[in-house]
Image 1 (cartoon, rainbow, N blue to C red):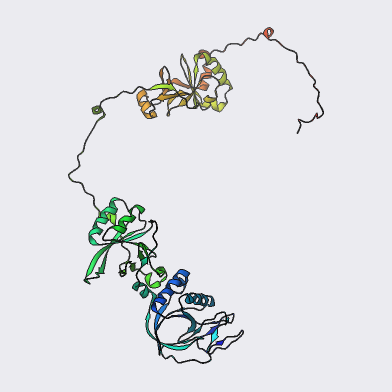
Image 2: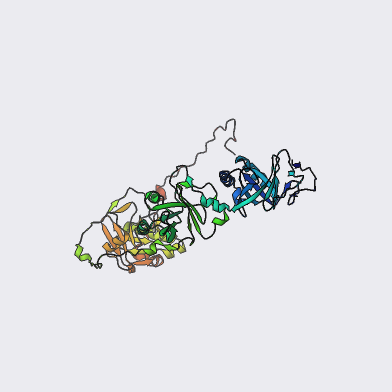
Length: 483
């Protein structure tokens, strides 16, 4: 029989038991006893799914127990000094037909449940010798510990099981290859620019027992298009890493959360294979040699150096024309003013501001003037021009046909340093750099190219009409239009 611990009880009979701040019985360790080894494996799998394995794996051990009479049992012991953790272990243990105990050293008592919210205590203790004593409401039993096994050793003895089918996915891959296919895979990955590293693995053969050499490829990002290559090629086995040092064969899953076991997180690598094959241990760690450094591309024969010249290709002519364009275009930075509007141009120059006047440049010809200025696009006279390249202008609304680059067009026009070209439907016009003068200088020499003429105004010809005032009815709402 067990004694239910009461509220505010301060004394316990079993050694190693204590009370937490709420008065609940707790020890330094928890012990989950299962009737068989397969139930113990199921317990580890359940702890993995619940996330408890990562919290309790440090110092965890699996114990094979032999009672003085009856069948053997397996137990899982882990550090546990919190009641909430022991409560979760008891709920998981119930799923695998196990019993949860708390205690320390050699004595363990059943953990609390709904009938005893503060836990249990035993009225008397048994002497288990070098073993352990378990105190349960249904039995009191002493066990001797036949052997102690780490969870990592149990995980290594288990094979990966088939995973549900799914779509192939990318991510990191470890490829274990036999020597023949492995050498071919080095060149294949290097040709397809796959970021992978390779190292040599020495392992024992399953039949002869002799050491065999394999190649281990590690790819941080395995291309999805190569997924079938690693899974279906004989001599290649693809693994999906589940931790920094653990990987499981692709298409399989391990019942235990391998990344939660401290023994499997060291520098050595562990590869779990499916179909009942034993796990592979690689003591050297991850390989550090890039596959690209192992491939040296060579060519047969010496390369021949061939020379060519444009003259040997034959000259071809291409007629360039200026044609109307349906695209919307506007002028920018230049304008062509015909000779008939030069007098108006001179009058407009007087109206320009000082900054615009200092920036404007004019090239005066008998046909008209080419005005280059950022403000020239706003002139209300002349034809606006748009820039094709840096020194070539065309009327707005026209395009060069066929469409060629500004560099090729400048070569065709044979533009010199500083020359400016104006494309017109009748042909191109070239302006040398010294043909341009500033607008300020043009105003000084204005009488020579655009004399001002007096504008006469005959007032007799202007008909003046006297204004007529009309008053309309304001209606019923005279202020309706005011807000």
